[in-house]
Image (cartoon, rainbow, N blue to C red):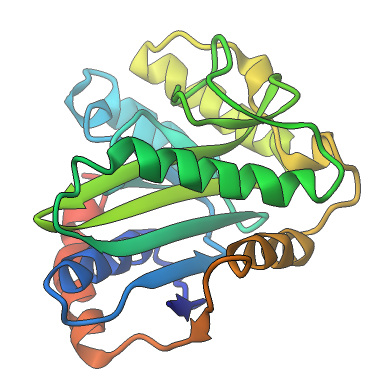
Length: 247
């Protein structure tokens, strides 16, 4: 599998658009299956359901006021926040019947990330936390209390993408922006579920978590470093406007 590490932290909508372009091209067999692991900029990623809610514009403004660029992500779910002290992990694969493998991809992806976090000495558990933001059955948490990883998927004809955010440091900052955004969207949640890995493993760093994730993936896949080709980058720039928050 190809490993991509490129990112655009100053242009979060372009980062999302790049993954969108990769999904299209992998599904058509134009580029090889890809693992993408990158460090994002400060981003408030809205789900498409959020965009239909009356408080969407207010929520995006609140995110920007807190220093997070609002975007509309490719996969589903509700609003999630991450920043330069986080990681985005994605697997983009051909899938002749993408819907049939939905739960297997969720299970395998969450198990992989929970295994990486557990290797750092954390009680990593898979399952929804009562009251969590952007709730999901495949959340990875610290001891069932603090959300550390949220997973989502996007499927198209011929391909599927599993995408996960991994929150490493700076839980207080993330909690603050989520509080304002969920208030604007009028979505109920328990703020105590928001945090980061360093709440459970003080002193942990992003590079350490990166290496743990890659080591876990290399147990069953060979990862060959790659680069973004010109055609994929051009398609990402075409798709970028779709993922911008409407100012």
